[in-house]
Amino acid sequence: MVCALLGVSAGAVAQELEEVAEQAGALIKEGKREEALALYDQFIAEHPDSAEAYYYRSGLHAWKAPRELVLADLNRAIELKPDYLRAYFNRGCIHSQMHNRAAARADWQKTMELCAHAIEADPEDAEVYYYRGRCFLALGNTGVAIEDFAEAVELDPDYVEGRYYLGMALVMTGDYTGALEQYDHLIQADPENWGPYVSRARCRERMGNQQGALEDYDRALELAPDTPVLYLFKADICQQLGRLDEALAVLEQALEVDPEYPTTYVRRAMHFLNHRNDPERAMAEIEKGLALEPDESRKLTLILWRSEVYLKQGKLEDAMADFNWALEVDPEHGRTYARRAKAYYEMGEYEKAWADVNKARELGGTVRQDFIDKLSEKMPEPEDEPEGDQ
Image 1 (tube, rainbow, N blue to C red):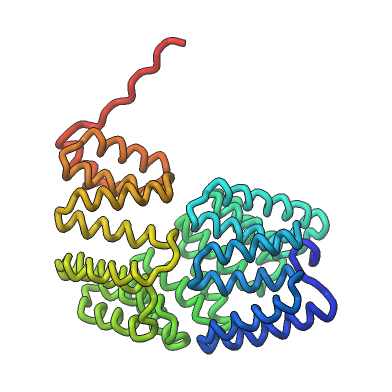
Image 2 (image 1 turned 120 degrees about the vertical axis):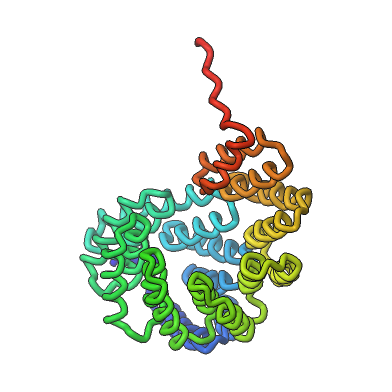
């Protein structure tokens, strides 16, 4: 292992931190995240120069705290250990979630540089290939990412994270059979770990096997009944199967598990909007979710869903205000342009709608073909103006 690059320390402080991490992990499994966080707070107060402690605490902050707290811990970890590979990678992920794409790319590039040095030092370190693969995946180079994940798994067949992301990358390329092989392997190795059941369920969804996906979600819920997102996944499948009353009941269970999880209110809002034709109830659910979300960058998704409700209500100016706010937060968010195009369409501003459609395409956003057909009936797609002579 390349200890210096991967942030593995030695000595008494490291041993104490390992004990704290073990205690914190046990508390997290019991749902006592605040108590786990307090352990790291106390450790950092006693050992303010431990880069690893800030790194571990950042992971706990990432659960619900504002992302600025996560970023502060990762910045401190990197300040204390300038070659901290994992901290650079995670900081890139936080920058991405905060819609700071340039900073995210810079951190992932730095991670890849550190990976290259690490591989030179030890070409058989599976973890380094894994992190480089994660960077390739984040930067959109899925094929090369698969090669690195496969190398990590070959070097360490029991490497759970490497096999998990290998499966994810294979799903992204449409190799569902290959992905299922990875998830089946993980489940056989540890049938009490709920994560691979979720991954296999999502793969089965892509394959059109909703019943198989439902069975996997049920198994995951047996193993982790206090995890609200699992109820949301199951509710989605119930809706796909037309079992709407069951879906709503599952969403109610999610609220019982964690009444302060904002995403649950979003999913409930979409249920009432799309399956109950009740935009007023949908709006009430969205507003509850927004009131619970402390992080401005996380509010983007909720605001975009609120704009969908506004569109359904015919409140085009309110929808447009939400779209414009979202684009101020993240001007490279392709889906926002795709959604704003619908508002321009409803307002009869077809040229602006086409401009947003093309911007969405440029940024990798998906524009539904049925909307393109509707827009084309109102106004043919403008042709690019020919460039003049140079």
